[in-house]
Length: 215
Image 1: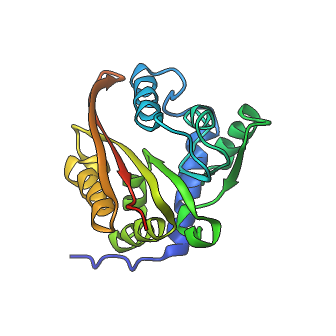
Image 2 (image 1 turned 30 degrees about the vertical axis):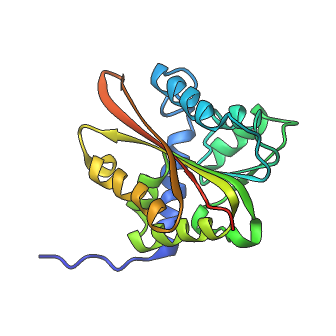
């Protein structure tokens, strides 16, 4: 039996950048602007958040800005991160003049406390990729750091697709990542599951809205 390869954080970041840049180089790899399931997901996410406006907001894994475009209608200012340069460039063109700053950055290299505090953090379709590339400890510590840097009464929205074919989107992995948010101190406000198909495959999208208790 081959021993597992030691974790190398720099290699993990390089692997993430290369993987996602290759995907985005020739366009939208997941048809995020047109797929009906994604449009419904965006609508659900916005509806969950839409009972108030937000101050400083962080979006992790913004891609080409499909949800960012909706997010800026209820949040100002927004810092949106992604590791794929082609996606960031498309997002900047798409939202030129909007109250959003796009940054080419792996969230694992972000200092949430220095950049915050945050009124809202959105992590959509990203946690399972972070778990694929980084140890569970690092994913948990990221959520802990985000909780510490969230304002009292501020919110965290997690939205992740569960694949019936399992892999990195297995139901037990996705639910474990969401449980981390509770374990670091966020309180669950709202939970929804969206069932649908994409490219003929069945999926379940788990959407959970959390709140940090008042300090």
